Amino acid sequence: MSGRVIVAILLTIFIQTQTLAPAHSASDNLLPEAAVGENGLHTQSWFHEGFLDLGEDLKDAAAEGKRLVIIWEQKGCPYCKRMHEVNLRIPRIVDYIKKNFTVIQLNLWGDREITDFDGDVLSEKQLANKYAVLFTPTIQFFPESLEQVAGLPGHKAEVVRIPGYFKPFHFYFLFRYAFDKGYEEQPNFQRWLGGVGDKLDAAGVKYDLWADQLPEKLPPGF
Image (cartoon, rainbow, N blue to C red):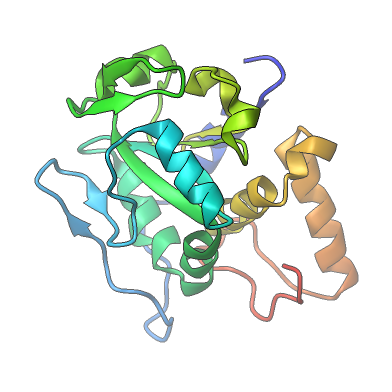
């Protein structure tokens, strides 16, 4: 995976060890809870439902000015559940993702057939093995165009990969990092995020990295 952006697993484990108890207050303006599909995965109505041809999906996303992202999940995954119950109920996060990304949800143990960028046709679980996806949730971000993919398989074409659950602050800025191509100037997401923190500090914005909500009144550009 050299040359690709992979956040340190130790940091991910630290984040995952934070309490799983919901911390939203009753007054929070949250989106409705996600439904659970027949496969046992939590799902979102705005997730992309296509023919599972990654090349075509990326092409369609690019035509809309969006980036393609895969979220790997599995039945019974507590941190997948938390991602849906916390992160994907925050309007600012969901609005940003819907505006800028085409999101495909894949099942780590699923049997649906996927066509990889290199033309391989594999089941979800075979593709997970090919991509060496070991944790759920795992989020993979891909280049802007098929030309940049250059016929490579997804795990070699990806520009950012995050294994594990991130709290809302990290999660939201991860998507901004991917869409704004922050990885081109700073391949280490945590260092890039440190720069974001410096800017927020300079703007007098109070934030909590481990909170279950985003900072209030984020400045323009954030």
